[in-house]
Length: 230
Image 1 (tube, rainbow, N blue to C red):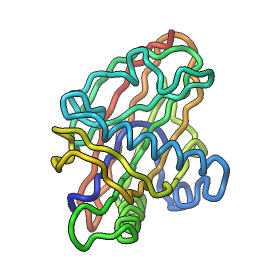
Image 2: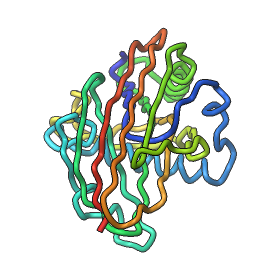
Image 3: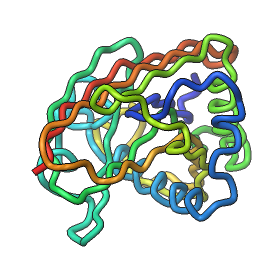
């Protein structure tokens, strides 16, 4: 995998998708898609800003500022981000407390590309981001099972969105293993879900993803979130 591309089949949602129709055009051109694209930028800026020791894409991560009582923004209608596992093949379990009336935003499958080596361009990385997601959803063995409290989610909750071009800042000891600092001309593509606020009480979200792509290899996830809404 190129160093400039980050694949994260991370965090929940969506159901089994057997045909391109379910993902290929979901939400395209809609206001929902525009909002999702904007949130996807903020999600990547959040996830990439964390060092390895408390990064939400590391399997050993148990919870952090987005999952223990601190919202993304202290305003009504707040939205929290959730992250899955950066490494394939890990069974990840996390327990979090979420305040009432909080939406959850997370990717089923997502990727970010940015120029970081000589010869790489914004256009090339943007096309690569498109290619990754296209190969994932069109993989012959692509399967996905996602449940919220034991019930499968409806496919219309999934929005495929290509982000606007954005910048982000990496800390020392970042998950990409490259020099700290600001990186520009990034693009994200992925399948995203905004989950409406859950009722007060305990909830369990579980998802499994598997896809074998021709270019990028095998991607798997087995993630469980135990949430307590208070």
